[in-house]
Image 1 (cartoon, helix red, strand yellow):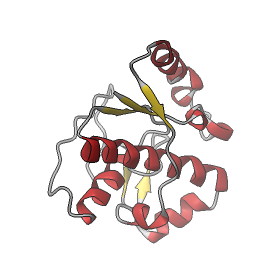
Image 2 (cartoon, one colour):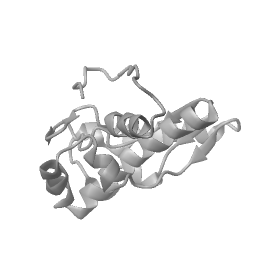
Image 3 (cartoon, helix red, strand yellow):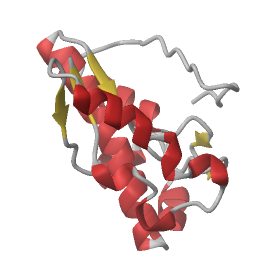
Length: 149
């Protein structure tokens, strides 16, 4: 199994001061994964603005871009979702993205809950734009429901 993760996901530059976004949410997961030898950890790159704009308005992207640290970590999270989707699609193998900040509370023109870009929407819309998929099923297993894209 491929695990998509970047060390900057551990509350990079304090993207959120909310306790729910603390590094303690992701650090134990990575510790467990690194102890297993059958997982390969792959570092993603930030999503391109073209990819982000498939899911978000220019106004929203400009708003997030106004804080360069926030834009970096939000686009890196979206890039992690893209990398996860591409590995699963292209290699036909299991892939799991350990990604922060999450994205399930970001809509086309707004965001809340320390979600800035809708990572899954960006990844799936990229696969759709490349004519790789026509639809997808999303299982959001957070403790509360996310927002639809």
